[in-house]
Image (cartoon, rainbow, N blue to C red; front, top):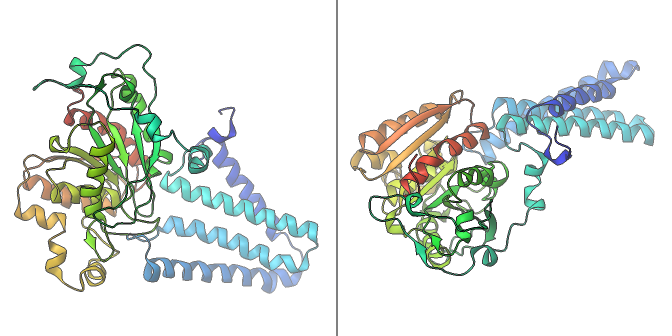
Length: 437
């Protein structure tokens, strides 16, 4: 194991096993009571209350609140139930205990809760280490003005050649890129976006500076623009690519598309927020005014996972002159708030025609997109999203796109999304004119 505990794996190795063993022991201590009243009615009441509370929580989340379009996975709800049970058993024990034993009972409940939280983390493969989980608090990034520097002369590839064919890195080029937090105002869209993040590869620090392609990466829902950094390991993936290409890699922009952690804008302009105009106009204007990258008319790349994957396909068919390359990682068949009926009713006041005008699969049936290329990635064990993506793939192919569908080991989790980005980055870079695969 790495010497720094922040770098111990939360997904595999000894730590998750130790946490599970500690949780089993903690549960045993919580249940360790010899009195007849405990086993006759107190323990059954605690277990029954936990079961009911978990079931009610599942109904509230999936039927009423609906923060997640696809609902809570059964395994995730089960681990939530275990955590609730630990808390319920501890609460039933506390009134009869003195303070030292109360503290021990609370500690046992906390161990159970932390273990269940990490099991949910393991299900989604979200945070590989505590350093990744604490990323928003540990990493403030590099000041953007310092990272971006001033505008310089550009190295541009001649027609028919790749940038790597003509690029010669100067001495002393950094070996890693930079991450910076930036504000992209919704000047035109009036969309209230959270701060975005920008990755600038090592070659961006050179003078003259190579004209690098732009990749826009979108998070899922729930999510935040930082997800690609903390859970996705985006910087490591890009730095590895840059290390084998003389410091060259795409510039990566991670903007907000939902406005809040659990917000769902459907990636369109509606009463839910004008996120489409934000991503196609405001983001474009900010990039052209603040980054030295390939111009929009050459076509940018866009990718994302889950909601972000759906949004990437939407942008490719709704703004094909801007986003000519897309990476759809575990996206849905259509933009959704949970069900087709609810989506049309809540967003379009029941107008199916209005929904059809923004639905990418419907658009793909009526138009051809020969200049658009996409990669559709899904988890081989993702029974909900993989069938939907097969429908999307067939629609894209019939619309004349250069598209491939690839299934990777895993389900609807970062196991698939991290691997998908790493696998397709050389293709994205080639599409952007950076280097041949």
